[in-house]
Image (cartoon, rainbow, N blue to C red; front, side, top):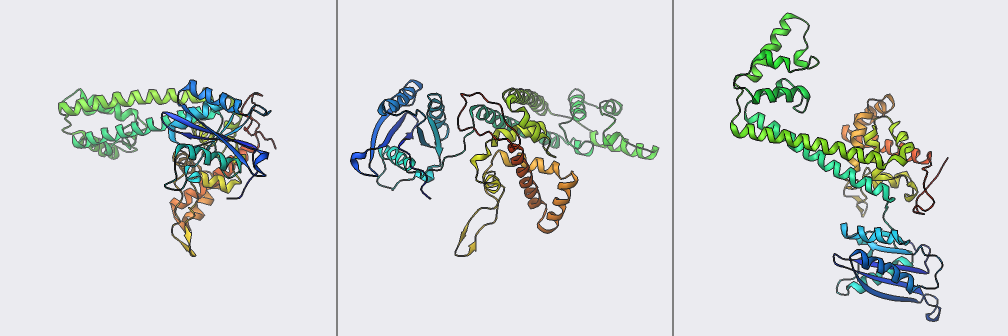
Length: 409
């Protein structure tokens, strides 16, 4: 990695579950041109001691005018999050780095050496920090990912309902395209309350827009009524199946209410970014909810990325680099964008209905297949998202994070 601008002062943190090792490094003219002084101290990981650590960093450097000192730490999951937040509150400039970039030699590893090594790499400009958006977007990202887990849990419950109906030989798939609709649930609730279902009562609970209720001739009507009768003939649930279905639907209702509350909270947090959300929403295939999810994951600071290709790679939408001796070992897309990539693919599925994206999709699908074509459309939509970020200026307070990027074109 090329050496970047060297820093006169830098701090390295080695974060653990119960404690944090901090090392302050600065240049000492008495030790030569590149002489560095290292001062190390250990702190507990509670809020009081973390605040004391930040004050200790300032007192170790009494002659420093600029209080925005660069602080580097490894990404250690949830343990690094409170440390990052406290450093940010105390006026420092915290950075998260990939642990693979600061790996030390085996057999010469201690906590004190680790934090000193991180501080030395940071002072010499050899660390590339990970992209961490401002606090509002971090909170929205947390809500978005929790909502995704709730949606997945609700999907698992719906699939469990489908399995129960299959075991009871209730052929709902002959009547409805899915069991999560209003008509399907109304019919299932009726079947739970009766031993011998009445065909006319079942028809009353099915919406007129359903496929099974649409017919043009008397013959077609008779055929669909017979199809409906066969689907529910002999419908009978055991006591255990009734118990599981009732609890499963209660769980679906509870999860649906929670998902709606999460979406409402995301809307409130992202209110200052409404102009950017409107621009994202104007892209074909991206809905208001998808725009909030994309903004929560990517933020608006596209200055963190070298170019649009680097941003697409960060999203996990381009092939991995795995080449040795002129042999390309893999051409699969990367594993990045665990939460972002599914949203972009869903938006691409919707965007192919637009004339512009449809033409691109069909041209690529004919040569490379439908799956690769969807990835290509998602990449094109990412480029449009970058263009949107360059056309909006998000109003922020003066005391906001100075790393926040504003740009108008």
